[in-house]
Length: 353
Ligand code: DAH
Image 1 (cartoon, rainbow, N blue to C red):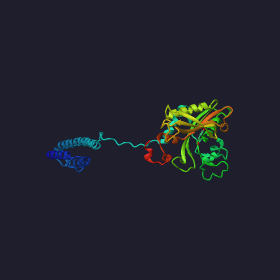
Image 2: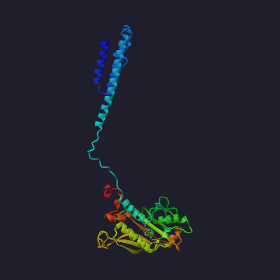
Image 3: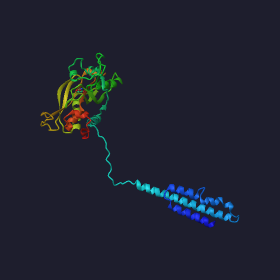
Image 4: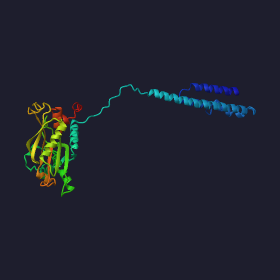
């Protein structure tokens, strides 16, 4: 019996040597330590042995069992280590491989120009005021001093909102310019203290719409940035100073500006601001059509009627306003010759910025 136990032990340990994974280890455990294993059979038959042999064999069998248990635990540890080593090897990261470039989008050229405009006016103390794109005829025209049949309405061919044409004198429409934002802002500010409204300094950026033949020079949608400053002692000098400074900050410190008289119903007097052509530095080229000047924005002193419509007493308050097209500015700066690129979503265009 002693010999037999020795053999059982040797055989089991030998078999364990050959075990290489956890599955085989489990099988080994069943066949060498399980209920029907030779070792367990020894325990089962202990009772058949002569009495004096029993304790001896019993002790030896327990020793073998203990030895096998120990060997099993050791093997388990080894297998576990091997597995970790293998998985580390398999999943090894080659840090010398070049990385895959991250594809990121970029900002639309108009957005870039808009952000520069926000920054410049932000530095000058202007706040951004958001105004709606669907407007009433009253806000888009009447409050801004366009009488019902004013010829300027012809220039701004309007998209009316479907089914709203019948609302008599005040149909809904897509705003043709950001100027109605002036009225919304003045209402909001003046309502806080109607007797003595606070001064305001805002820009109103956003999309505008006109019913136009789409061409290289005109689109049915485009952005505008409106500006409005209202206060008690605002003069045309403030307008010129602010806008010339804006031009220098956007186009470069050396850039010259000039103001030409113009006409808008909502400002009096009204002007256009030109900047010196930065392509030919005033010499005259195809972009400035030989004049040496580029038209950048419309501006003027807020018309008394408009101040009044906004809740500001024109006897006590004055203000200046301006409006510019960020797409036009972007086109000039990058010599883009066709405005249709802006909304065509062609990546070959957009990726250049
Ligand atoms: N609203 C004008 C347009 O769409 C632009 C403009 C001109 C805005 C003069 C102004 C201004 O505020 O003072 O063409």
